Image (cartoon, rainbow, N blue to C red; front, side):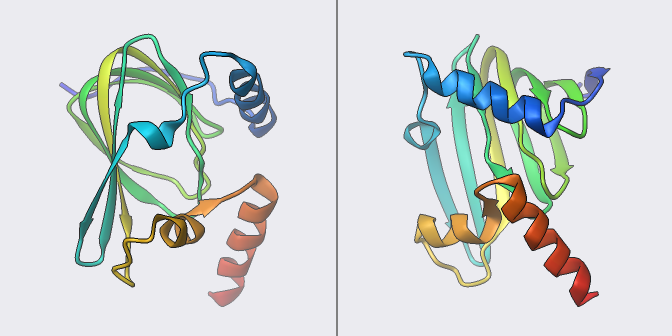
Length: 149
């Protein structure tokens, strides 16, 4: 239950970005922010998204490892790290730098959980902390983190 059903080769960063550009050009483009419910607890921010079956969405580039929970549904997930089919219920930790292309096979509800040490409810501030705008910004961020070790 909730196990990985199928593991396939990873997708390159270039291919993910090309897929995102192609998806944005379609008239059926979905604004993820319209589908998201935000949850706040002391030190924690969670994003909950409901996706209809046969929907493809592109996630953002995440700077940090974070928790994910697939509460319902089945999705195919492609990233530069792996391509897998996930079935709910499933909880896992995503790697820093993850950007996903997600295709829902059946209606799905997905939650990501991020630290929010300032307890802000300003979504722009939270996004600045957890999201890289592009892979160049991610690489600079990760390089800076490695220098601190």
